Image (tube, rainbow, N blue to C red; front, side, top):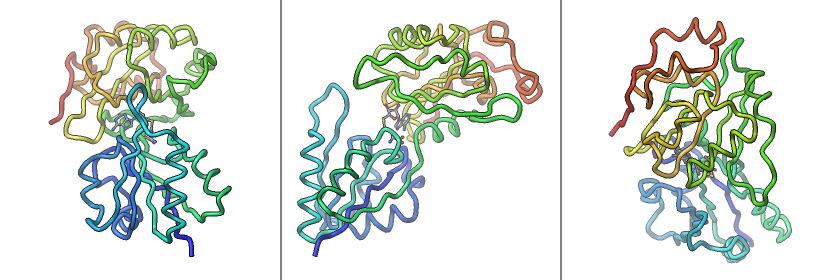
Length: 272
Ligand code: SAH
């Protein structure tokens, strides 16, 4: 009889952010195929007797081809093994789970998806940024800075204006280029912007700045995510990476002004 494949979200790095279900499945696994984003502490939870396969796909580096991952997953399930396909964050957010589900369906292998805590939510929690706020931010856009082709970004100016918070995954290796792509998509250069790197790990860093000053922000270690929008003004104190932020930013909405008790002070946090 075929085994089952679990597409499991490992969360952002902190093992305490695994779900109980993910933990149970990891402990019961016969084989685990994991991405390179999955933290080493989480991999220690895999039983010694289980097969452990790293199938990382980090852009620009040597990586396992997607078809090879499908092949391995299917083969292991056909051997009757309990297979955990472990992905950073949530499997359905930039996790290629769509392609893997399709391959499993085509092969007639049973599977189940176990959600995980995605990077946008973790980064927001780390920097204490509300992603939505009554009367100020009513929607959240999860988007990538890296497209498989050269499709233009959506019109971000009107989205930001209408109270959308933008979470930009995979902002790209070159901050200057990220800024020019976002500016070309209509993001005003003075838009409040937070870069959160390695969120939920001991090496996490937060820098709050404006889009314009992003290239000089220090929190650039990978993986990092950007949060853009007026709600960034509410980030916790001590995370500002430029001076004069409060006077330079877009006019603040009354809801933000009311909930923004302290002006942010000019330094960066490094929580070790
Ligand atoms: N499935 C994952 C996303 C994979 S794409 C999820 O749901 O979170 C990889 C991107 O996720 C990275 O380039 C980065 O933008 C973001 N990311 C993942 N883990 C992160 C972390 N701990 N801190 C900041 N960003 C992270």
